[in-house]
Image 1 (tube, rainbow, N blue to C red):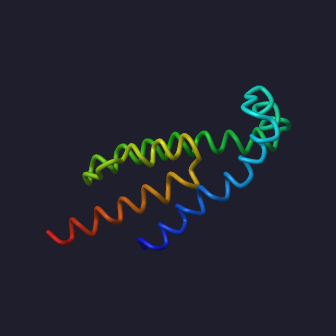
Image 2: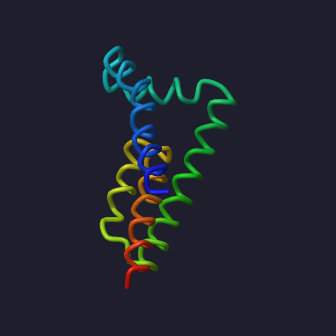
Length: 107
């Protein structure tokens, strides 16, 4: 599972930024335009609201589960979730969780 989560972590940062970086190079850091385009219609707003709820749930899970099993550096996937998205933060956290679970099994 570690390799699976590792590959998904890489894809989770590469694929979204393959779309975001060209947009930034074309429009710069125009937050007004970004928000306008992201919420241009109801289906876009639906998708973004779904993402926002997913981010809140994921961060709550990371904080709880990370503390429960003693994951070090759990702040890294939280920052990854806030800067890239769930597609990066979730597999990164699951990778760290898998590594931690393996260490607990060794004891």
